[in-house]
Image (cartoon, rainbow, N blue to C red; front, side, top):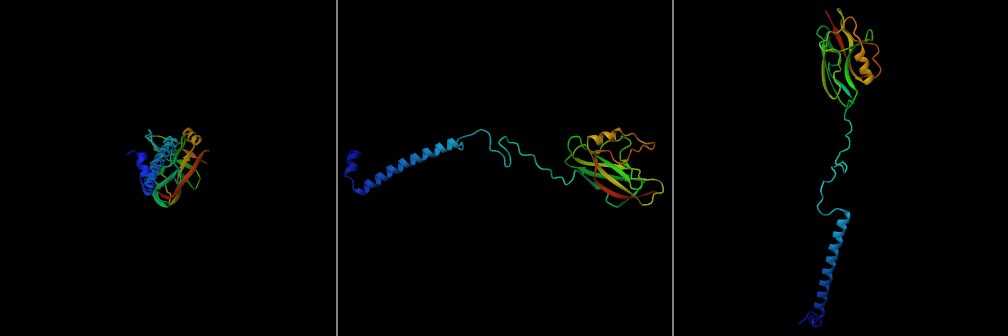
Length: 203
C-alpha cells in the first residue's frame, strides 16, 4: 500500500501524528540551517587560527602598559633616621630605585647643615659615578664624614634623582683640594627624593 493510500485510510489520530512529525522534522532542519548561518556570519563558529585576546589585552596580543607601583622613585633603606655615626668609620648608604626613565640617575649626597653645602658621596677608587641609572638596589660607603672634633654634628644623607642636565652638571664639577665635590645649591634638575639625618662624632 502506497503512502497516499495508507494516509487516506488511517484514522484521524494517526494522521495528526504523522503530520506533526513531518512539520517537526522540517522545522528542525530549518532551525539547524538558521543556527549555522548565524554562526558563520558572526565568525563564532568553525576552526580559527590565532587566539582570543588576553584578559585586559587587545586583539594584537599586547597588554596595556602597567601603571607604576612605585611610591617614589628613590628610597633609602639605610642608615636609619637619627643613627649615630663615627665620622672616621663612615656609614653604608643603601636604597633602591623604581620607575627611572631614560636620562635619569640616582646619586647620593651628604649635606652639612652648618654650612648648607652638599658633598657628593662617591668611591674615590672609581671616581664620581651615579649609584644607579635604572631600577634596582644600590649601596655605597660614605666615608669619612665631618671634621676632627665634631660631637653629634647633624648631617643629612640625601638620595637625589638627577635629570640629564643634573647629571651633566655633576660630572662636569671639579673637586676641591680635599677631593670633595661640593655643591651649593644642588644643580638644576637635581631633586632630593628621600633623606636621613645622622649624628656624626669624631675623637
